[in-house]
Length: 193
Image (cartoon, rainbow, N blue to C red; front, side, top):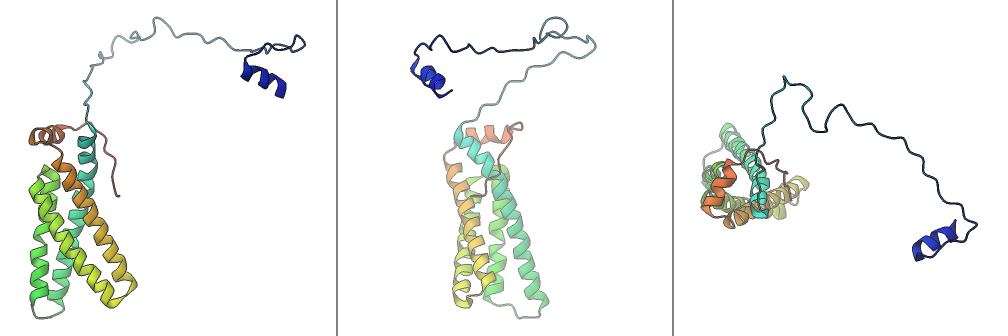
């Protein structure tokens, strides 16, 4: 067998003692009529739909759009819960609670910026994510508690996703952004890195 493979690789003629390989197959019968013709005349004629072709930047915007929208929504919920928890605990309002109310503006801008592909609104979300990341990292270094370190990494990761979305949005003109908003048939891939 090894010599047969060697002869096949080298393209040389095999010795006359080798028996040729016999291939047995079952013939496949074609369906009724002409291939591609309608069999049932009661079915409607298929309508051709033009394919939407997107370049790499437009695909990246669509892929990041849903991730940023989801992260902004979760950020709104977590910020509101932080504000409610501080208010319910009976603590006096100080600069930190007011800061969290101001930081609520960023995720709301992120929601609308991701939905309507507005780069300026996404920039506000990125800025508030950066402020939150600095606060989370400082608190994680101060407390050195497992959960605070984990949340600091999480906030840095969300900041990276939002900043990448903002950067990719900058590669598209306003006309191309409108085109991307009109696309409904493109199956997006969720991007989390």
